[in-house]
Image 1 (spheres, rainbow, N blue to C red):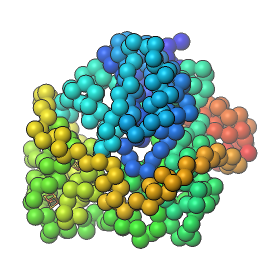
Image 2: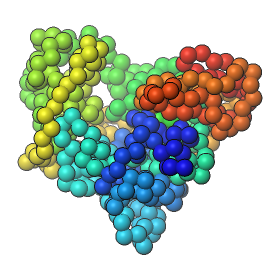
Image 3: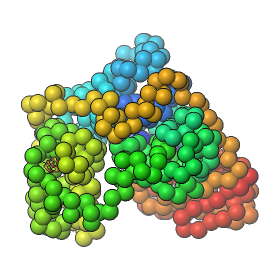
Length: 441
Ligand code: SF4
Ligand code: SF4
C-alpha cells in the first residue's frame, strides 16, 4: 500500500494549523522536504516538546515523505535556542548524508513556509504560488510524527498542544481529539474565575468564548487570558469599528509595508496602500486590493508595525473574504521574487513580539519552571466533522453503536477533498448531527 493511501486511511492532516489533507500534499514528486519545527507563535512549545521526546518518529516521518516524493534532500528546521531538541536530532541524523539540521534565529514569523524556504534555500516562492510549485514540501513536525504512526496503522486520535496563560500549571497537553477546552483548562488549573481563550497562538489565533469547544487535529494552543487583556480586546473589535478607525487614523506612514515579511520577500504587497484604498470601499477589485491575497495574515503589521494600532491584517482578511464570496479569483503573473535590500535588518525578534503582546509574565513563568506534561482522560469527546481543509466528513456510525479508540467513524465524501475521522476514545455514539459526533465512555 502506498504511503498516501495509508495517510488517507489514518486521517493525517497538516497539524501546524492549516489542516490540509497530507495524502494530497505528498502525492506529487518534489526535490526537497523540510520538517518545520520553527514554532514561531509566541508561547507555544508543543513542537519543541515533540522534537525533544519523539525525535525518532519525526525523522522517520521525514524519511517516509522523502521516499514517497522522491526528494533527494531533507532539512529539519528549528530554532537555535531549542538546544535539547537540536542535540537529540543532531545525534540521530549523524550518519544520514541526505538530511541536514538547520538552526534558525528566533524572529517572527520564521515558521511561515515562504520565509522558511527562503532562509534555508535562498529561493523565493513566487506570488500566488505554493511551495510544491517550486518543488519544495514543508511539513510541521507533529504532522511528520503522525505520518510515522500512520505508517504503522495508527490513526490520528490525539493532539499535542500548549495550555498557558492564566493557569497555575502551564502545560504541554497530550489531548484526545474532541476533548473540551474546559476539561483541559481545569487540568491546568485556571487562576481566574472569568476568562476567555485564544485558540492557537496569540498572533494568529482566535478568541473563543465557548469553553465546550473541542480540540481538533489542528488545535496548537489554548491561551487563557482575562477578558480585558489588551490582546483579547484587540481581537474582539468589530469589523465596522476597525474600518472606521482605519479611515480616521491611518497616517500613511507605511511602517506596515516596511516591516511586512511578505513585502520584504519581494512580493507586491503594500498594506499601507490597501489601507489608503479602503477609504473608497471594500468591494473594489483594483490591482492594489487584489494584492491583499498575498497577505499571510501573520499579524506583524497590527501587533508591531502600526503606531496607530490599526489592523491591516484584518482589512486584508475581509477583502479576501469579500472578493471570494463574489467568485473573484485573483491571478498573479508568477515571477521570481527578489529580497528587498533591508530584509535582514527588519527581522523582529520573538522576544519583542511577546513584549508588545503584553504576555511577558507567561513567558517568564515557563523560563523559571519546566512546563508540566498532562494527558487527558476524557469520558466524553465531541469530534467535529470539519476539522481540516476541504469538505466535512460524513458519519458512517449509528447512534448507540459501540466504538473502540482508532475506529473509523466518518468518511471523506466521494471525489472530494477531505480527511477521515476516527474515534479518540472507546465508548458509545450518543449524538450525531451535521457538525459533530459525540462519543461517551
Ligand atoms: S498580516 Fe500584515 S505583516 Fe503579515 S503578511 Fe499581512 S500585511 Fe504583511
Ligand atoms: S502602519 Fe498604520 S498608520 Fe502607518 S500606514 Fe500602516 S496602517 Fe497606516
